[in-house]
Length: 435
Image (cartoon, rainbow, N blue to C red; front, side, top):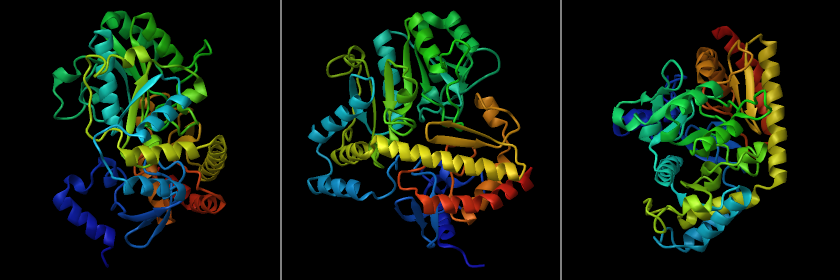
């Protein structure tokens, strides 16, 4: 059998790049098979090096809200790049991007950085510096980049102190990290009862998306989990940090904040705001941001932060991301969700679909809902593996992991929806056979 171009490139890549990829999930380890090497992308489509065309439901893990190679974004990037790609000095583009982010969110000041990991790393330093406290409370299954102190696992019992979740992270680095189960109010209250005067901040994904989409649950008081976290943190003199790297400017014009209205003290952003370039940001109240150098004593810096080309890509993307774009995304997402559940139900495949705005996940589970990482981890990953490959064979590119969201773009139209719908029955049968 002839070796495909992707297989050849993957073999070569594994000789020079650990695992053959520069970000682990791209390696297809959890679904098996060979990762597709992409040659180009346009609108809602990816084209691999073997000439195969796929409806893209990853959208670069979120950033491509408008679709790939949007002509207005490309034109703006071209004009910016023609003037120079990096100066190491302030530019108008970064000011305009900062103003656009602030106009869409409750924050008063923002600092641009280069990745979501850098944003969360910096915001934790700021929270600790502003409060004079060391401890951080996070949630199992919430991913905030590969920051050492946040790469921890949840232990058993209530509000356990974190242990390193990966080799290379010293235990001392995570000793001040508390891990609770997502959506579990009792664990949060227990953590603050024991460590309240030492906790600098609570950090959470605004709506969890890295264990699959798990929205903040609404309690008996009518308030969602984010509102509870903000109130609890403030009652103990701690800060509430909302990580909107994934949800920011994707699930609504103002991200998850636009859906639930819960105002954080500090926020992180990424993905959509970079328009497909390495760009991210963190921001919050002006009094907190004033602790950052050169105004304050909390040091943070970056040679390429506020890069003029990346800032231009992000600014153009946000300006084009109108309310009409979000309305179209919401409608497309609803259509796809309905088609998925219809196909899986027809094949008698147990499943739950959960969403935040237009962002959604399909969990292969008998459970009525997935409120936390324990429930997410209990899903039938073998069924997803079979489903994934059946969709891929029919030209629909899903995330190569059961613990990820489905991302759509404004470029996905009737033709792409039809292709997805046509692929679903066989994929549902494949999932059913895997049980």
